Amino acid sequence: MNGHEHTRLTCVRWVCGADSGHFRYCVVHFGDSIALDMSAKAVGLKGSEGRLWKLIEERSRPGADRDALDRRIFDLFGEQWSVMFTDLSGFSRHVEKFGIIHFLQVIHESHKILMPIIEEHDGLLIKVEGDSLLLLFRRPERAVECAVKMQEACGAYNEQRPPEEQVLLCVGIGYGQLLRIGDSDVWGREVNAASKLGEDTARSHEILLTQSAKQAAESYITHQFEDVGHSFEESQRIYRLV
Image (tube, rainbow, N blue to C red; front, top):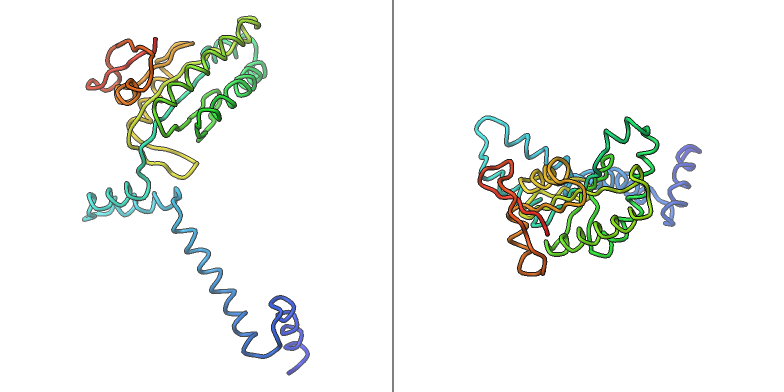
């Protein structure tokens, strides 16, 4: 054994605490490569966005069995959730008049108001995008209860503030099967619908629900609903919580 080999072996003894010997050195040396390979494979088995898009890539190939791949995707990522989008009314108007820093303060204050209520109602925060929140609730009635408390808290806060500092909350709620990619993103028809309601349709202080969300929640809560017409899908109705 030359000096170079002895140095390497001593290093291995220090790491693994084993007796010296060529056999033990080889096990550790190749074990490192195996561990790295297994670690990479383990990452590939997680419910990650990369794994979803790998299956989507397979689905896009000529001759792919799309039905089978769709089943695999929903088996891996499909879940039943109530989804909520919140938005703050008056963004463009307030930014133009008071500047972006002023509106960032309003966003900051809204988070201080809303986050504890979301936690109390077992909501999961998936995304924060500007003045909007994307949230998940396992039970639709909890989403509705949370939205009501959020609006009440914003109303109480606004009583003590001038108009330009008020938190004017808009809420859209959907319910149904969606694709949940860990804690990073969700996809689905009810996700799109809730986004439309919360960010585009609802006025300040309003809580709007998709037809699916209303039907799933109404037997568990005492609040009434008002039919406000068709959604962007003609077959679906929109309901306002009153």
